[in-house]
Length: 221
Image (cartoon, rainbow, N blue to C red; front, side, top):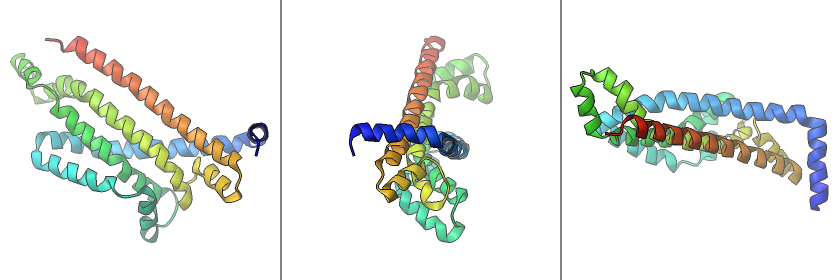
């Protein structure tokens, strides 16, 4: 298939099926967003506890290493006999894949907070909650945001596999194209996923730089 023909077919797809395309985009973003929220709800408190208790940190690290060696597609198929197909098993599999970077970076972020800042805060009369809210969380935030970024990119990429179990998303285009031997669908789906991942990385990199500049300005001693 020549490049001119491929481009014309891509243009034709958007002219005739743009509504379907944006539905797939919305499904992909929705699945990724819900997954990230659930994973953060689990990982951020657990990561903070891990930064305070070594046994919890050791468990989180070992747990994260085990999760990283599980192929996402294998995890999806393992869940089918127990939960069936659709959104629920896709969410569970993607949450499991998102937990390692969130846990590790949250623990690292809180562990990197210098005791000096805590001592200064205590000397100024701050209680435990004030130290956590005004010192520990702001200083750990760049690491936490980096963990969220890594998790979101992993979710967006792996969410393409959710098509296998009927959860929809841009993976539908990719696997439709592979099934029909039509590169038009593969390119549209693959490039769209790459763009979503790139936008996520750029957005979080911006937030991380802002958080670091704020920390340098606010906590320079």
